[in-house]
Length: 333
Length: 305
Image (cartoon, rainbow over the protein chains, first blue to last red):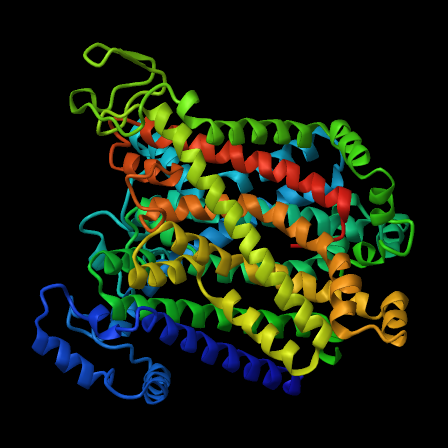
């Protein structure tokens, strides 16, 4: 097991180096990275200064080595808009994106598990058809459109939920960390929790749309695979209730592929909230990056890309290890 | 791995069935499969719409009438003498005409991306699977690296450097999808490489180039085609998202995502600007997906994406 984990860690490290190399390549795509790092108001002196300070006047190989070394220290330069290290700015926004992705993930699971199981146990009945058609429509719907429609119905039409932001004005100081929803939940601060919940509901539905549709289909097919196994028949034969057979015996065995897919979905969600954050003005990394793009704040964009890619690799590593732990055959493959 | 697709050429499997009466058989199967048929019909209609936009669109999509901005659907516009079936946008342009014209960009970009990424993915996949060893290791690590990137942010950072354009959008989208082809095609190549007919060709002294082009390539194209049909829908969604974020094909070219993005600011006063392009995207993607599911079931139901 240790050997397996070490091997996977090494692989992850290689991927991280590759990610950094591509970030470097993007920076040099136009051949003049110094120009990208500067605001439009910059003068020739600024240009020369940044060229020598960032080492853009040195050979490319040397620059690459320097870039890798900086990346290892999470140094992607200074945001010229906020005059702070770019990575620090991105890390400030991480709790918002993390919270959105995790709540979206939980909502996707809450939908996918019962609907997928029901679909599998009622195969080829109207229940199954309805569920699978809904999943197909869900996979075909642009989530930013769903977000706007949700705003139209629940915020503008029924006036039930807010259109944007993470908490109402004045609530923010109640939270010590950047995790408003989870802090409210764990500290049992009802005011904070209910307000954060109201704000996160629509964005999480929007962000989790695609995942819930895909996971529903996956739960169904994994359950169908195991429901025809001998041990399910044995469980039925010894007189267990159908509920126990399905939700204990079958689900446990169907969960192995589900863990992997769910892990990948979580990784995708963490990096894929840009659109949702834009629709709901959710102050996470995605919105930050869009704003950085509009003001050509390049170091921030690079730091954001690197950080989210890093998280994706890390989540995948954890999933792989969990998978090997659940299914010992993987370790020796 | 797609064992059946690969075995197709030897066994009386899919490929043999296709060779017997390829078009007639596929056509018959499509006619029996009602949802896919519906998807195909809608897609043909949308393709027609894109092809003949100037004849179908009731008005010039670029002509704006600031005095008639944000008029509701089904209104008669007095001063410009128009009937706005789907209303007008924030500049008084006819929404229906803009949506009709926008189908062009979406279809062109998505198909271009699917074809380009397919080409790259097949080449990389066959190279990795057939040559093996270090080529395989490098190719597959490269796939891992590209899979790890948060796609929208990667697109953002590339556009930040190059500026938005049609070419950049196609390249960025191809960067997202080639890895999917590469993985599946590599797997198919690995199993076809071990088949007797390939071994026989090698034993008979066929050159490596001939083995790859004549024996391996035709047998890994089926999974590639399935990936292509399953990913067109995903690519249309991605293209729309990029346009929505303002990093897609730049204005004044109308795109569904772009119109939707414009409409976002007017959602409280003119919901139709954002609503209708979203419907257009959804129906297109749904049709592609219905058709894609059938293509997969018909060619090779085992392919997982």
